[in-house]
Image (cartoon, rainbow, N blue to C red; front, side, top):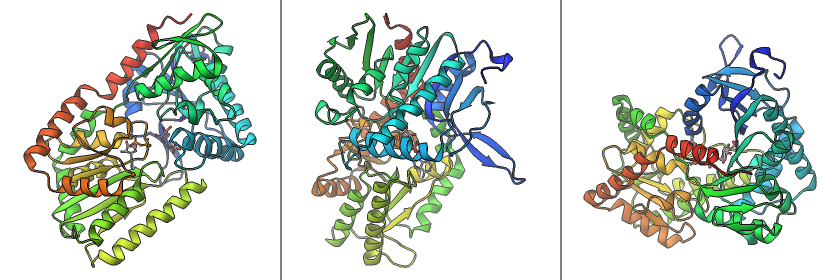
Length: 472
Ligand code: ADP
Ligand code: G6P
């Protein structure tokens, strides 16, 4: 890519993320095509990409050789190859069996392995090299998420002329948990290569500021960190959002409304539908909510004709052990409740372990009287925002965990502690029995906030802050 004469000038805006924003599709004749993946981040960045000859650096999602750089949807896409062993050690290992559980309150025990760390360093170097090659002089580079925390420092060493931003999409843990990481100093220094480090919640930004004082001995003042070389780094929260208009448009289509009605009929026309949509991840509290729902049925506080549960659980990180254990736990719980309370054509819990088109998700959101979002810990949780976006008629009730970033913004939701089974059960009953007027009042307030805080506003506030930083 570096020798492509048409691109020699480089891109003045570069995104670096573990994944490319495209999905590989096989045509009927066997040839390969790339399709833009759905998602707010790509949508939000598309205008910035188009205006700046933007480039996106990421992994194409399969081990082995990477496809040549290509252009799609106004972006120059550069794929970074990962060998099968690096997928195991860098992606499944250090990213998803060390950092992911450590940063999510150690809900599952993190595994610390030196060979995984070595792979993490090596792969982060590869991403930094790729960014250094495509970035134009003085370009803005935006690095994303926990898989690439060393990239800011590595990139700055290669290209001190760049403006570097970093955004962490997941929680950032308190000092007591982060301090367990054997490579804690290296990770902090990696992040401090950026001019601006963004987090979902203000608490995460203060955890980071405190850590730079405690573990590195740096001085901080408000959101600023003073480095020994004279650089100033800022750490602040920028709660991410979704493309509200796009999803609402899908939700308003007559065929979506028809599909929502069909879904209700197909599961036996219950009076009320509760819905969960998550990646099958132990941070999401899926088993906890199924157990709570099952207890309500077991105790006769609810019948499956009154309310049934639809749980969509997208397959995720399936070769990581904790994800395999969780799948067994959830599927056992679902089987048990259906065996006891289901009838032919009317299950108590409808469980779907696959991914869906956005149109089908919108129909599910439209069908759901109660949305159950109960993560044990979550950086933001976009599903909660997607539900609100689809409820354009101000109907529907949102149950939301206190431990999701979204809880900072939606105080009108029914907030729950997902570890409290009785509280969860009471809240489900309260949601199912809420007066329509009260539900409407709450939903209206939540929509007002959401519509004003969509993903475009998130991206532009981060990029504005990045370009306005003092830097050095
Ligand atoms: P996380 O980033 O941890 O997966 P979020 O709730 O923030 O959690 O984002 C999940 C995203 O994945 C949402 O945009 C949601 O619509 C999408 N999604 C979840 N389940 C499915 C599915 N089965 N098929 C397609 N997209 C899904
Ligand atoms: C979370 C992370 C993302 C990640 C996504 C899907 O949202 O913050 O960085 O891409 O989950 O996980 P996966 O491992 O499939 O990329």
